[in-house]
Amino acid sequence: MTEGLRYKRVLLKISGASFGSEGAGGIDLDEVEHLARRIKSASQTGAELAVV
Image (cartoon, rainbow, N blue to C red; front, side, top):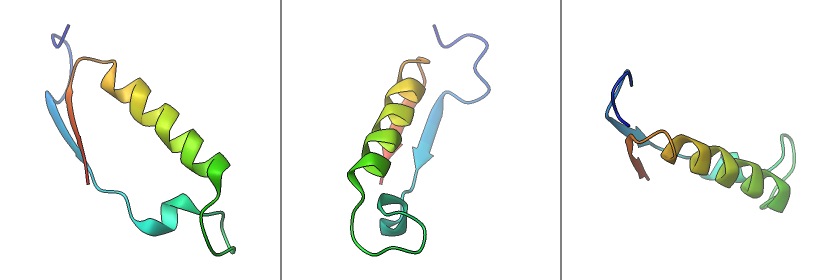
């Protein structure tokens, strides 16, 4: 399934700011869920995915 992929291994470095809404403090669960869905989608491509 990795044939045709541009990269076989991907390192995704996520900052704490990506867990919150723009201009608001704390963690926004909707943002976390959105990010989790995007990571899941990326992992289903067959590439090796590391999240830091």
